[in-house]
Length: 273
Length: 273
Image 1 (cartoon, chains in turn blue, green):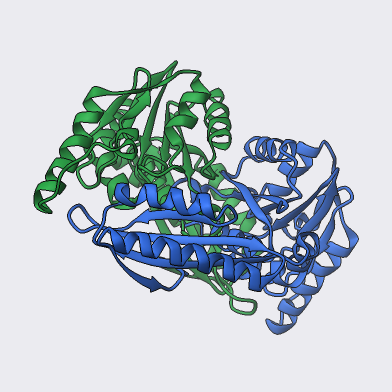
Image 2 (cartoon, chains in turn green, brown; image 1 turned 45 degrees about the vertical axis):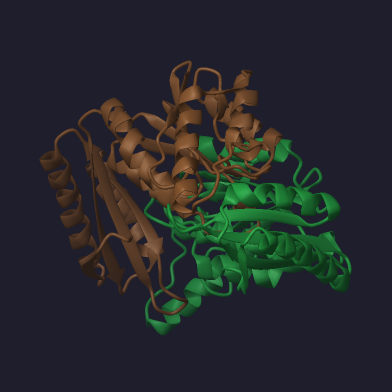
């Protein structure tokens, strides 16, 4: 059984539809590829109470990892660490290692712009972490990521800027997920079916999934009213990538034959994104 | 105070990062434009227990509307209505009006394809609604949307296929949200700031928001390490659209002046999406 992970995305921009949540998709995909199961994604606004409720509720569901995005910057409404601290009933305190990272960023910036580097309160704010947390170096922006252990969960807070979120994840977080997941491969393939409608292939999917208990097949209707076009997504997870591939192949061949007998047409398609 | 709304998106494809959640963004944007506040978005997989937990928890937070997307189709893993029924402790039962809608869709389809129209179990499944619920006509696909009242909340279940979700929302749901929200306008504007870094403009934003208590200003850093580019998003809500516009203008002028004094450059930009 793959280890569960939860994702919490923080930001009013996500709740007013200003920003499309590409971070959640990217993280969920990376987690899956690394062998973990994202069980829930929660999106809340820049509000300490909302963040702390979401964190507390997630922790109660015992995920192995809880990853947050957004709300680590210098502005008054960057409240993720305050929300995490409130949820875990611990204090925020200046972390010397984080402060050093922030200082160094502004020193470089000031040097390049021939100005004085000041450690103003908004800048110091980015180094105030929950007690016991450690900073994760941000190779692109200023606010460090944050990592801490709480009971059986590892909590990771990443910035909301996608390039910064991805860079910190790949440099400092991916290896931890991989270590916990062990050697697990996620294998997937997609086909497009035309010429039959979804309700006609439902019993065929049931039959093939019954015969192939480790393969998950999901249908996604894509066509408009009169043109039926269904994407079928086959996936499985296994320690052995050869086994995973063969397992999906077998289910794929079985289902393709059944669909063709019903008059459906099949073509393989690229996995989206 | 705008009425709160919650969104729950159901689908394994969202939790493995296969699909980008454009539905949540579209609904959140429409809700905001209609004068409601999306307070939380939750994404869960095709699992009755996960769906029912998410629905139960959302209802406990007393939203005026709870909108779900996904999981209304004919396949075994379309479980949203089962999850809602479980959360509300009611039964699923065949709804005659929904059954008529489903029947009519397949009758037309069979007629066009010169085949016999059968009401197979996967097709009947789409007409099994929670007790007391009503179907919402789906002008594009087959599975009807669903609407029901529970305590002070209106629960709306929409399909996951974006074109169907949007069509049902616009035809049958938008007017209900508008009615509850009353005459409220959401007004927003964006500017791009270069030449200063985010932590430098934090105290300026604080000052302008203090002077303009009904305007919300959020900074979104967009640049890479050495090129600072910050998007500032100004927004407000008011019954009078002229008042809303003037209020944002005033805050915009004040903040622009302060930023320019610091050596920053400003240009208006289009609101994303």
